[in-house]
Length: 186
Image (cartoon, rainbow, N blue to C red; front, top):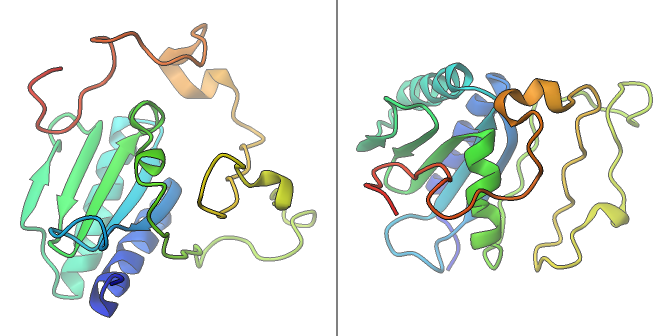
């Protein structure tokens, strides 16, 4: 059983709303075969708390215009990992650090993805628009998902990532990482 048509449409609306507010790494995962409580996860990232909040506000507003309201919201006060529960669709908007640490795509890698293409993204061959072109080499061979890996942004260096300057790419030791919404601790 795959996600319902209504859940797919809601997920695509939420993903586009997030992309319109400059969310990065927007993805939709069809979790309907693994979870009975929802059909799809929409995953989106932002480089700072203000951007996370702007994305959350836009997703809520856009879905509200289509008659869909969240039944639960978590993490809004901290704006590091905000979860919006629309019953059939759960939207996760994460600060880039939480997205890298928790790697939800990896946890749900056995689930199919729902294709999403940002309508505002430049179209073309990549060279004329300044965007990278993905090839078969960009697919993660360790993943069961044939979806290409996202290209690395060209203009963002370590300075653009804020507090991670000087830190290596390794994950924090136990007890030092970010906490999930609603988590009392680990």
